[in-house]
Each structure stands twice: as C-alpha cells, then as structure tokens.
Figure 1 (cartoon, rainbow, N blue to C red):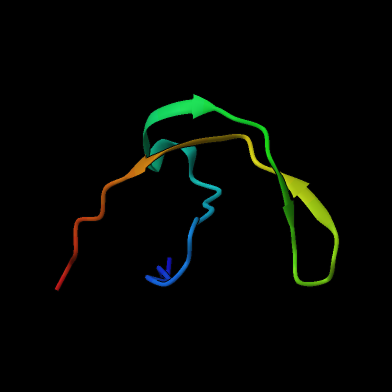
Figure 2: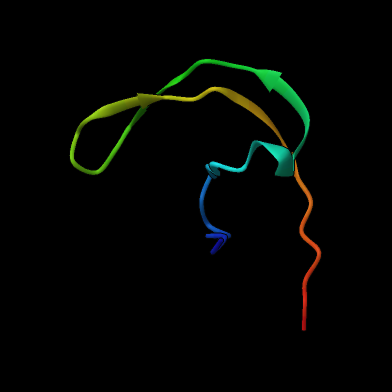
Length: 50
C-alpha cells in the first residue's frame, strides 16, 4: 500500500488492518466519474519494515 501523505483520505480492501472501525457510508467520486461508497472509517497503524 502506497500512502499519499497529501491525500485527505485513503482506502483499503483489508478491513482487518483498520482499528476503531465505525460504519460510515459516503459517496466517493473516482477519476472516471463513477461513484463508489465507503463502508466505514477507522485508523490504520503502520509498522515499517526495513
């Protein structure tokens, strides 16, 4: 997963990465103008591997 540090929000298909998950449905407009909906919000904690 590449994190864009200038982005307001991020998406992941890996629900098990998300801590403090809260269901939250919001429309998201993609670059091709299609609309998808969020499933929820929460916190993802990264553990860098070097």
